[in-house]
Amino acid sequence: MRQVTEHCLDSLVASEDPERIRLRIWVLESNAQAPAYTQPGVATLYPEAPFNYHAYMNIGIREGQAPFVAICNNDLSFHPGWASKLLRVFEQDPSVSSASPACSLHHPRNGFALNSGVYPGYGVLKEISGWCLVFRRSILEVIGALDERFFFWYADNDYALTLQSKGLRHVLVTSSIVDHLDSRTLRTHTSARQWLMTKRAKYTFEEKWLGRSKGYLMRKKLKLYLKFPLYYLGLKKVK
Image (tube, helix red, strand yellow):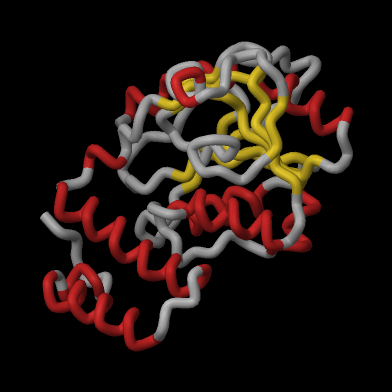
């Protein structure tokens, strides 16, 4: 995992001319014993709370003041000029509130050719590339902080529906390329923990966006609790 994050940061720092694009980078490191990252412009933060994707992203967001915010996975490879190409779209179209770069490994085989234009929409794994989201800081005045109940899974689904419900326009920019190296972080967890991370978020998502009845959700959550009570209460990790 350290090598994955180091590659991500190396490619990010090298991706833009610092005289044209100033990147201020915060790494939210869940391992308190891990050494700080040393790439130029990178600060390492060690939250006391256990890993929670949206909570960690909220910490990073609060650290900055720039008019544009990028929230990113650690398993990425940034191509040259990815940020300047996104910013050009924001500058040319003030109606764009949020944008994602394309992944050369994912998007071409899903109907989005590289360098084929700008695609508006809210489709997860389509226009919404949850592994790298860039937005105007001003939209936080409308959507508030990221919902920390989505600590890993369904985070991009919640982001997409939040933008859509508020009438905030999101686009995929296919000239901006950031490759996603396919859930390297998730694979470090056991299959049982992955299952729990998925199911627990699914029920929260259904409660928030699909209007599931309280009775339905209580039955689902009780079943999950009975299977892994200590994990569900947050007292220990599943091994």
